[in-house]
Image (tube, rainbow, N blue to C red; front, side, top):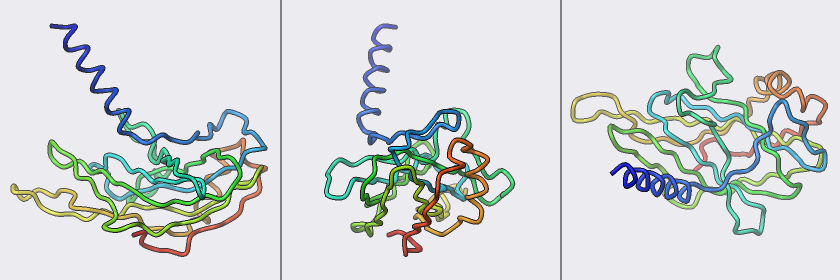
Length: 203
């Protein structure tokens, strides 16, 4: 019986891992960063504290079909990392991702909300607008704050639940640049290019 349960759990874990998109290498604050690589920088936040399960922002090298996702909110088995504890209206983190130099595009997203014992999956109703950015060797490309605005609804018991949501993109460099220096001391001497997409609600 125990062996059967173990095999079932292993199969379940394997299927979950196969369902998840591959992710790029996140910069570790205490590890050196290869100067031949570039860094993609953004802050990922939300106002949906208890209901948000996961957010995937998909990107690819321009002209490639190999899609990957950003490790948006990090591990949250017990608690989510929060780089903005002073702000009661949002939760999230500043994310630095190491990428090969080249031209890239963010082209899709998926938001998973907890809804009772199930999950509400939200995706764009049609193909999302492609957001292009360039990664340079030895340089940081900052593409802004990607904030998940949640839409609240009521369940059959009258309790508040997530009914949907969407990413809102904004230039929060005034907040994020000071955080960059404290969170990533290994990137303090890297030049930063501000390249926030000309879009507000990313549909």
